[in-house]
Length: 146
Image (cartoon, rainbow, N blue to C red; front, side, top):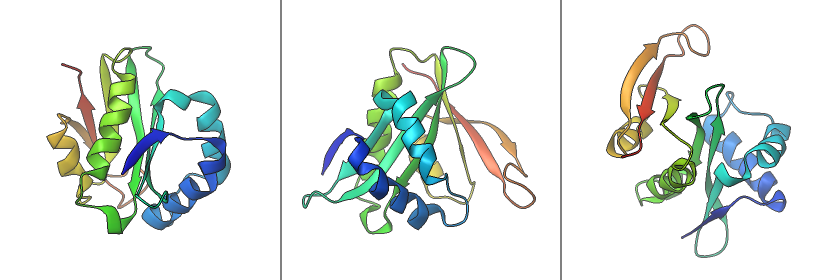
């Protein structure tokens, strides 16, 4: 597995992963182009040994200069449980570390990724039972560099 920053040519594969992982709750394809322009240092992907893109992670700033967000982490199902998600998240967190007092994210409480985030040091900071609308709960989690 190789981790590296996203390049323009990677965006169709990133969007395909977004659709495969998140189904109906996806960022539109043009969002990823904008994200690459705005936050290239915090937009990483994972490639398998064949050079296929198997996941991505994306961070972004907030209104508070030292409070950042891990906006998205998506990994193809066949690659889960192999440490790829952890490595991707860690790559983005490492890139954010010089600027971050804290990093936040939201995650469905039923998503197994919540356990990954806890292992990375994120703690639950709140819950919104209708984050994306009725029946769409999300945990707000926060990480502070140590």
